[in-house]
Image (cartoon, rainbow, N blue to C red; front, side, top):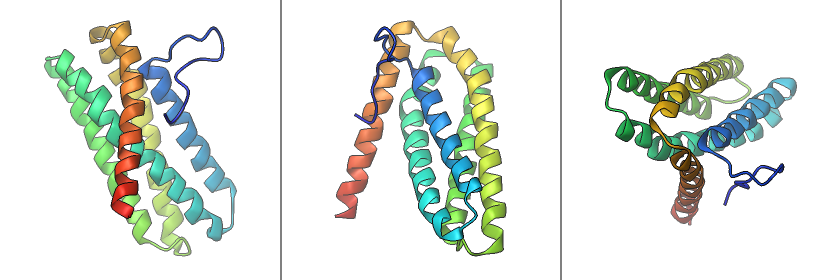
Length: 167
């Protein structure tokens, strides 16, 4: 497992919203660390960590949380929110690839990183307000808790697949 699925207070089982929020905060912290460090030599290392977190998060989220929302809600307004969320993920993937292809010493690297940070912040804001609102209307508390476990397992599966492919 990638992280404990229990809160420290009262051992309450973590739901999908707390699980996703934890991911969001971790990426925001890593992005701020990168911005705080002025040495380009450290940017690549932090970027690779950010990239890994974002790839794991977006893939696992789409396969678990987004799929569950799409299955539970069959209304046009929800579909629009989900299309927007998938589009955000696609934009983030494109920006990650752009940054991977650029040298961190290139003056455009920090500009592109700023675009990535903005895209991630925009997505987080939309997701935590619009998507979660829709999800809370269609998912039960049991589903919300199960989805946190499912997303954690999916991340582990993705990590294992990457490790096998690298061998």
